[in-house]
Each structure stands twice: as structure tokens, then as C-alpha cells.
Length: 95
Image (cartoon, rainbow, N blue to C red; front, side):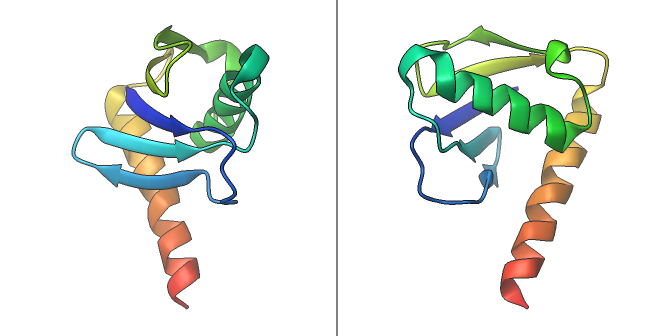
């Protein structure tokens, strides 16, 4: 899955946007020392209901644009879980 990460984000919202083929995620950690990547994997694992060991940064380790591999679940499951979480947040903000 392709993601665009915003490190040092002031937003408390993890999933900022889901657009055609692009998922924008916010993390609060700085990009130094792998802290942003560690937070990204931890929060993504929680959102998807998988272990952090099931996630791997395939490319973009030092970039904002990354490709994340999710082992053990289908691409459709990942898409559905992220969109569901994104919709729940949007509904909660619109209430």
C-alpha cells in the first residue's frame, strides 16, 4: 500500500485523507532516528488489527512517501479497514 506520511503533525487524526490510490497519514513523532516510522507502523497495526510484525516498510524508509507491506491480510481488507476508520472519524467530526 502506498502512503504519504506527515511527521511532526499537530493533528491528532491518524488518517488525514484517503484518495484514489493515496493514503495520507499523520504521525506526531519526528522523522529522526526512525521514530516516525515506528509510530506509523504501531498506529497502522492498531488500525488494521494486526501485529506490528505483520507490517514492513518496503520502500521510502527515509522519505515521506512510503510503500508498506501488510502480511497475512488481503489488500481489500486493508482498504476496507482504513476507509471504515476514516469514515468513522469524519462522522464523529460532523456531529
